[in-house]
Amino acid sequence: MPELQRLRPDHAPALLAFERENRAYFAASVPDRGDAYFAEFDARHAALLAEQESGDCHFHVLVGGDGEIFGRVNLVDVAEGSAELGYRIAEKAARQGLATSAVEKVCALAATEYGLTSLRASTTHDNPGSEAVLARCGFVPAGEIELDGRPGITYTRDLTGVARTGAVSGRRYTA
Image (cartoon, rainbow, N blue to C red; front, side, top):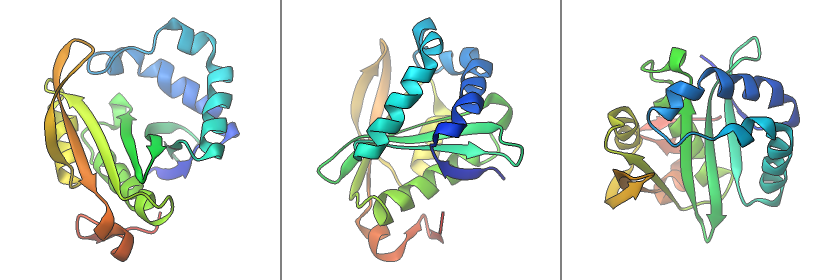
């Protein structure tokens, strides 16, 4: 099982490879990052690390034993005890429980390490896998939205119980 790690400078080459290898797969369910993302990747990676250092965001990658990245789970727009959760898992690692495990671990970190009390997330209705992951991880529907011209749903997750117990979905994590 890949290990959840906080994003670091040395993750850049593997993260770029992950994004390139999965670009078409991701674009089927989320907006494409565009050519500029790949052309300016080094500067973008440095900017993400600066945002993380400031506490505005928390970025995580799922790293295999050989350093290959299998996914990422991010907490962005941290403010007033809340953040937006986003994640993506490599096509070859999909449907293996990796997203659920990673999201649960990041929920625990959000509460116990980052001091957050709630999370928000959203997905399109044509991404039932993501809807299932969010439901399994304790997120509840909060309203309908439109994402990149497609109907979707927003979710929220109360983390106040996690901060006391360190547990998510009845399991304890020590990420």
